[in-house]
Length: 280
Image 1 (cartoon, rainbow, N blue to C red):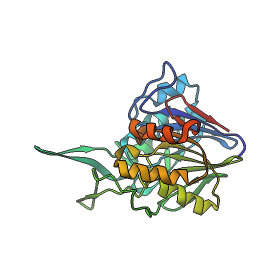
Image 2 (image 1 turned 45 degrees about the vertical axis):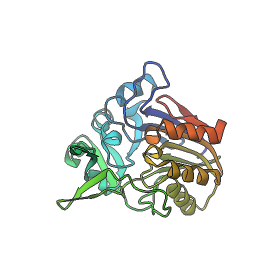
Image 3 (image 1 turned 180 degrees about the horizontal axis):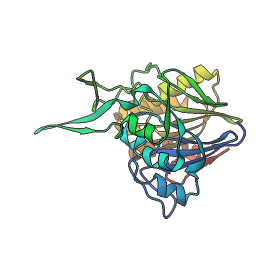
Image 4 (image 1 turned 90 degrees about the vertical axis):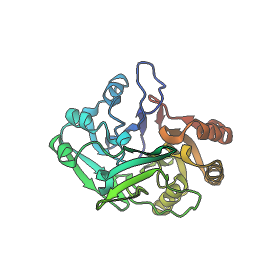
């Protein structure tokens, strides 16, 4: 892939004036093979931001969903109403009933965090789902990881996340967490949704599957905000052992982790606000 332009449409913070931030994530990917939408944010900002940033959602070739949380899928209906019938790549688990359970002194607080819409409703708006569990080629030089093996002990699942399966509430390890991979002339570009599989797990898995060690850029949510200080330092240590030219984190990375990454990586680091662009 020779020419790539990746623009952040939805994110917690804003870089461009007149755009809006929300808790969520979405990027618009322009390539030699057309345009692709990776995630749709929480649904409050994707349409307005796409207009302000002059990204035409009517022309996207495919929609790709990283995982089934509301802040990555909430904008699907609005996008589908504009785009019409389109292929939507995702893992079968995106439709699980999901929740966060926070332990409080006066009892647990449970809130729903799964995809807000039923499959049938999204299909009525034009979604044509292509569901994968394994490593998948979405388009020439564009891939989805499928389920990522969890090999590094310091990358643990978020203990607050649960899912309802067969009437039982179980710990949710988000098997549907998928990363988008673009094979470019400068090396691999990895776009995380939230990296629930663990950022280091994902990077190592991608290098193994692609038989390449040259990572040009990693972008997106890293979920580092939910790690202990010790786990964060292990992640940074592992990153420093890799050859990565650009680190553009967003969303669930958090200010604490983003500041540490900037301290360690300097000019290689940038924050992926709404409106920020990576161009190859």
